[in-house]
Each structure stands twice: as C-alpha cells, then as structure tokens.
Image (cartoon, rainbow, N blue to C red; front, top):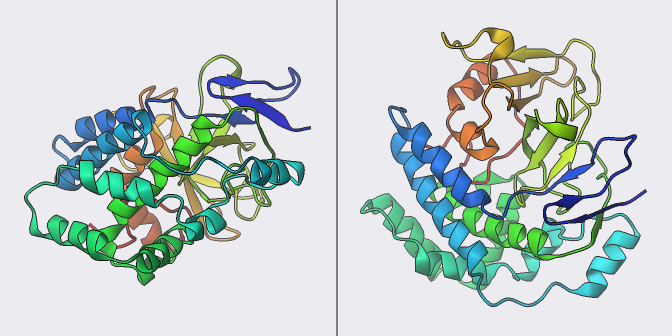
Amino acid sequence: MATILEPGDIEAAASSPPFLHLPPNNLFTLRAQRLERLADGHPLADYLRLVAGLCHVQQQLMDDPPATAPTDPERLRVCQQHGLPPFAADSLVREGVWLPFLDALLQRYPPPARPAVEKALASLRNANVGQLKAWAVALVSGQFTLLPAALVPFLGAALQAAWSHWLLGTPNLHLKPGDSLSQCPACGSPAMAGVIRHRGKYNGLRYLVCSLCACEWHVVRVKCVYCEQSKGLEYLSLDDDRHAADQAPLRAETCPGCHSYLKLLYLENDAEAEALSTDLSSLMLDMRLEQEGYQRPAPNLLLAPGGD
C-alpha cells in the first residue's frame, strides 16, 4: 500500500513502521551549524567550513528559490501510478530544470579568497549548458572521474537544493520502495548513510538518507542494503576514548559477502548528529575501511572520492 505524505506529516499503518521521513525545512541550516562545530580542531577544518558556507546558500535557495518550471503533474501521476521515483535524477538532470538553482548559487555564494575555489566557480560560470548537464549526469551517476573534482561541491550543492526543494514543495506524494534497499524512493539516487532514530514511533528504526534530495526511508536493521544478506555483518568505529565501541555515535556496517559498508549514525548517542556533516568529518573511517578491503557504494555529492 502506498504511503501518503506531506512535509512534516507521515501517515502509516499502526502495525508497521513509518516508511518515510522527510527532511526538515531548515535542513541546510542544521547542516551548516553542525559542520561549523565539527570544524573546530579538525584536520579538514577549511573544507568543512567551505561546505558549511555552501549549506547556508543552499538554505537561501530553499527559502527563496529561483524561478523554475513547475513540477509536471502528469509526470508525477504516471510515476506514482507505476511506483517509480517521481523526481528521477537520471532523467531530470538531463532536462536541465535544475540549472536555475546552479545560477542562483553562483550568484549568492560569497567565495573565500582561495584561487582554487575562484577557478572552480569560473569554470562553472563559463561552461555551456551541454557541459553543465554532462558534469551533472556524471555526478549523480557516481562517475566522479568524468568531472573535475574541484567542481563537485558546488555542482552537488546546487543539485541537492533543487531536489530537496521539489521534494518538500510537492504535497500528497505517494512513494514506494525502490528496486533496491539503497535506492531513494523519491529520486532514485543511492543512500549516503543511515540513521538509527531514537524517539517516539521511530525509536530504534533505521532510515537511509538520500545523497541527493535528503529523503529518508525505512530499511530493517542488520541487513546489508546492497546484497541483502545478514550473515557476518560487523560494526566498526573509530577509536574514541569518549565512547565504548558499542556506544559510538558513528559506526560502519560492514558486509563480508559483498565487501561493502554503510555508515550508520546512532542518534541515541549523539542526538544532534546529521548525515552529511558526520560523513565529511569522518573520512578517516573511510580510509581505514578501504585499507581493510571494503568498498563504499554510498556517495557524498559534496566531495569527490580522493578529493580534499
């Protein structure tokens, strides 16, 4: 049965967990504030503060969005009728309806006085529409090598703002699970991380967080979201004197079957944790897992793999 949702209001059968959890309207402000706190004393402080600045602009785009074509009601109807993601990234990104968000971001973003940032912004401003679409297609499809790494955070920020705007601005959506556990039901993008919630009817439930639109959807715990097996899963965390291993607010669920992993945030141990900011501030965990032979299918659209 389809789940009917509106921003801040999720209807579900009392006998089953709520399938969907929408991001708050001030998502990007919360991300920016969290990044600014995490930046203090962090080895990647400059990058975390740069992304925080982008998040502030993303919030401006949400609060005062650029003029864009309205969402096609016929597309929404057909997608919902057939259980398809209504904001499918693989098609909408090619249509260029997100380009006004990129233009607005480039106009509103106050860049730091850093040559690399100025060069990246100039590349985006000077690129033609075809090139911008090609870079965006590469980014949302996970082909990071097909676009300059320096462009990723700025292009990714514009795309995230556009898709979150459509998600939160469209009432009465009917969303169903995607073809795979890790696929966003709203836009079809892969999950960035998982969150273990800790309050009310969400207590103990795992929700995956979309890397693009920030929609969250329920997936049962202790199951690999990539190969769907449960045998042998382990949970690894960074050494931290403040937390025992089984109480760490961030742990990676590793699968011996497909050699993949997914980061999980445990809000019981850090109620203010947020997926994107936690992911960017925990790259040491990614490096450790890569050394141990695990692969990361979950993208972060504000950082190219191997970037800094």
